[in-house]
Length: 397
Image (cartoon, rainbow, N blue to C red; front, side, top):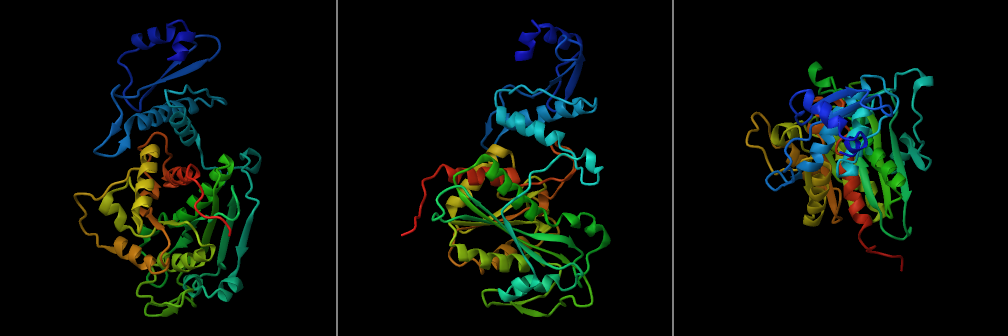
């Protein structure tokens, strides 16, 4: 520890005198070890032999750093300290992730004078009901019919390289509240449905991060925004709508609205001739039963994309897996949803991420707050960063 050297070994002396070494995720505070820092947190990182786990395909050393740093930051935050300094723990990126995520606090309802300034996204287009109708987005509009709130189709652009290079298109499900529509959800299932726009939030956050990092890629973010409500004009089970690509869709259950809004958004994405299309959203609760609450379901028509998202998940500790050994009471809706969306992307390279299972964080992970998790944003950023390391594939002729 660099700080221990700075204190001429006094920190370790205090640690030995205080009892057993902290375990992984535990933090111990020491006060007035030396005059520069009034309080210091020593955290446990677990076993010294942590490394890459081939069975679970994750870097346990990086995750241990995130967990340890998160525990220390939360302990210090309880003391209302205004400024924290974090050692690099041998991997500065993981330490920074753990600290930043652990210290984040939801503040939308705070007094405006106490809010932290958030950078504004300057380049975007928001398209209303008339625009969607002109573009034959009837599936998207069918979902919004039962709500008093009008639908919007948000488009975000980032150009980090030659504009002639084909972009990566990100599509995020933006259901701002999902009641289930006419096929109304049970009240306990509506608890987190303000978070049904998690896919949209993931896309916006990813584009912001890419812009901040100035990655040499072109990215388009497409976000269909609306509510799914059981109003007087709401879509009914048995209705048939025609999507943007002309395919007719029988709406058997209005609670499966995510497929409808993404279908039109995927059709719209094709006009950019993207090198990759990635859609992300909280589609099916079956994901939680099939692969558990630690992983996002990934479906793709390209093995290279699977390898890329898998590699990205190793760095960010957003676990990827093939299956779980127990999935009682769950059907195959996650697979049929992916198969449904596959009908709207033609032959383009496509990756579908179903994040329902990771939408809500329980608070057990020290560097993630209880509530909406924001996953798989970090993995998606890492995934796109991999494209920044590849040579451009297509130029204007």
